[in-house]
Image (cartoon, rainbow, N blue to C red; front, side, top):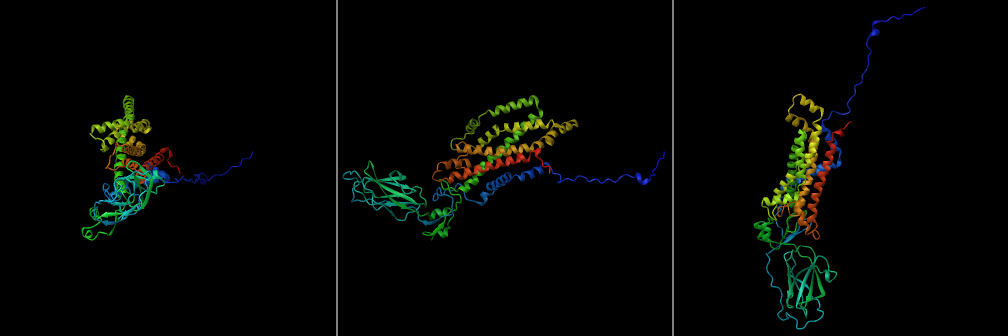
Length: 472
């Protein structure tokens, strides 16, 4: 049998060359917070809400330095003005009383009572109507013992639609009336009705009037619209009044200025109170969750007891304890009640997180290496609960803002003249039908702020969830 042999050389035993392609990362390594920020930026609603929150901060802190109008300044010449441009006013002298028109040759009481009394004729304006006063006059009516004057913002369609009763004259020979009740530069419809002293006639005469905006020279000087030199020759000239971009309230105070200063009160309570009770809740829940056992059971049963306490009752008790009576602002009692009663929810949430984290392997390893409790809490447990704490704080802020607005609305929180969004809503409700802007603007700020913080909280919840970390 023939066997073939093969000769081997040294080169045949050299190691084979294998080309290894190392796996390359598709993106650089990111920290937990960098990854959370990337996910947050992808959430359009959360980013828009974040910008709104930042704008609210500038509106609250920087706004009063830009818009320097005094929120307590009463502009009685522009009461309940809607949003608009600044008005032009005529400079006039101070108000001078008017004796009116009384006819000596006409009887004050009718000689006989007639069944149907005709309406006055020649119903007219005496002098030029202004926002200071509107003077009316008419011809006397036989059989009339007096006249009733009405005012409306639209033309009456029937006797029951004459509008606001301004007043009456006593005597058929008193044929004039002066209106000085909250007049602005809008169009009015004045109506006059004759009366026999007992019953009114259902026949009336209507006149349409648009008073001219005026301001006295003395008032212009006090409000800084004129200098002392200009005042000497200012009578009869026109001047531009203060600009109220969001209008004025029922006392002529600038709405924009009051919203800015009201934001300071509302956001102070809405941010400081959550910071305090969330901080306490984190410490309380952290201690309960870390120690566990009887300490945990005892602490959480006390938290359950606090949850059962009625917030409004404690708010009333704190106001009484601090000697705050009706019509006075109860900012400190409100803050104290929120801090004392709102922490259990945070404590429960943090306790659950700490119970889970303390059983992790790295915690056990650190404990075996001799790490103290203080080191474990500060180095491992608290940093791993920061995400939950931030989300809790974000949701607590709108809740506190809404609580302040509700308490101020029902008169238990911030009281006028101190502005807050809730107290401004309370004042705006009284005139919501005739001047809706007084209610719409503070309510809009409350709604936008609460919605922005809630949407931001939703975005942070998704961004800080470690299970959703990017794996691109």
